[in-house]
Amino acid sequence: MNDANDKHLTEIGRELLRQMAPDCELLSIAPLPGSYSNETHLLTARAPAGDALRLAVRRYAVFGDYDRGEKARREFKTLELLHGQGIPVPTPFFLDDAGVVLGTPGIVTRYVPGELVLSPADPIDWAEKLARMLARIHAVPVGGAARSFLLDADAEASWFLRPEAPPAFMRAHPDGEAVWGTARALWSRARRESPGLVHVDYWSGNVLWDGGEIAAVVDWEEAAWGDAGIDVAYARMEMFLLGLDAAADVFLRVYEAERGRRVANLVLWELAAAARPMFSPEGWVSEMPASRRFHQFIERSRALAAV
Image (cartoon, rainbow, N blue to C red; front, side, top):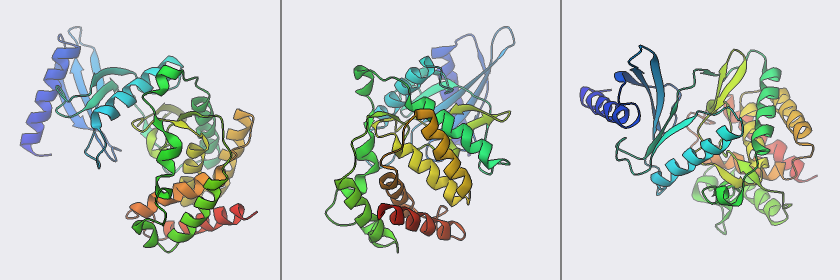
């Protein structure tokens, strides 16, 4: 971080405190680890009584033609909804959908201490807890008014099927055309599931842990309404890519037991999940052993599609 950027962030931090907590003194504002696609900073301030105030400042990066103000509103409102239902998420405090204070559209939440667990010491326990948390999320009641700010989950996950031929990035991947063809066939006969709240990006990089328990599920900018199997499939793909096949199967078994029903369109959504790494494979499935595991995941899903 350069001096100019440091000064800019300090100014943002001070203005934010003037808006939220005018009696507090800014101590620091520093990047938080694990910010994959947006800028997230930890703001630390001191209250008059000496107590520490710690806030997570999340500012949305430019990505395609996505409306960053809409992202901010969607994530903020989703966090309000989930927090009200007792789901462990960062408490939302401040919405700046126009970027007036933060310099770009963003939100401010309570800082949740915790760590990412990307290589679990006990994969089965890890998978069971992830499954139970996801089942809780999918059981959250969402009224008609709340659905208005959510994306269409099915459309978000199946975007690569809209053209009449595989997109160029899939044609460039050795498994791409096979994935597209099988997924398109499954899409045409997919079973209509009762829709629910979908995270869309539920993986270990968006789950904070503390003391062996889930402290918070984060990154709700793509929160959507649709087939909950989308989240199940995406989480399972990550587990297969990590070589945690048994954990992936336990995850599915525990999730289905918690929900009391099977994931009807699982194979479709697993193939849809597989399209995502093909779009940007570097650092994800571009090297061994991940590339081999990715191919095996695809072959396994396609074999199940043929049953």
